[in-house]
Picture 1 (cartoon, rainbow, N blue to C red):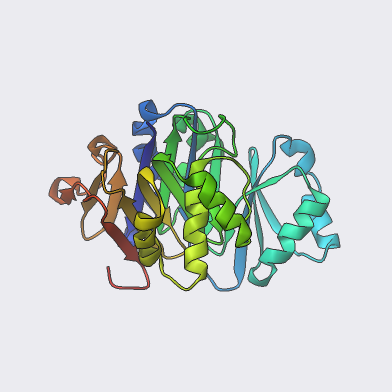
Picture 2 (picture 1 turned 90 degrees about the horizontal axis):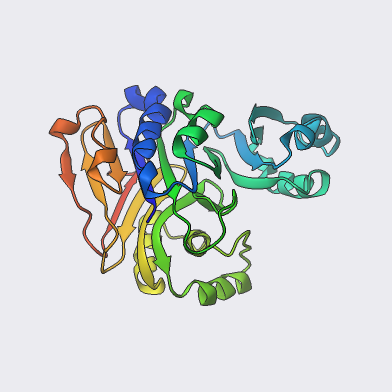
Length: 301
């Protein structure tokens, strides 16, 4: 079943409250999927710094001395420890380099997401526990997405939780099930994509990454997904500056959106939106089937 939420802020005055608002939205969706939960928060970009969010099943050993070991590998890093996750801040030019270094010096850690803007936190457990564990309520930002999962396609694991990130500053949450994900996975592997799980939602994320690598923006990539992905799906997707929503042509998975002068919000159900500021005067609608909704901070909405 799963519950998904998203919040794209237009009003900078709300940015310090992003984590708090998004947390409340996700916790409200708990009964749609109690297996695992995750949130992606997009923050400010300075053009000089990149971030890599990593996860470990043994953080005490894997995170100990990590900054020093990265320094020996020629990577100057600041590390913010958050329970089983750590956010590594590095120079923006070293994103490729740090992936290779981590594989060498910490082979057991897993990269949850990377880029100039995004931080991704996900674990097995209820949304309220995931939010508390990682201090999400205190996080500010420009936009974010979240997911609470009821597993249908793969095991209940940290890697199987959403959001899925397969490209820099890109991630996706999904409610539904894809029928052609195995064939599409093989095609994407031939194109150079790699996968961490057998989850169909990771294939959807990788498809969008591959399409955007060809020069498409998020809206164009989501439009292509309507032809190339088979099955039932509602996707909410984040990029460094953008936020997109699309439902399959049948649109059997529930969805509702709201827009004011301050934000655009998405929820699997309206109750996820009821505590947002100004919701009583928002334009509220159900996203149309086979229709792409796309906002970008660098483009007109």
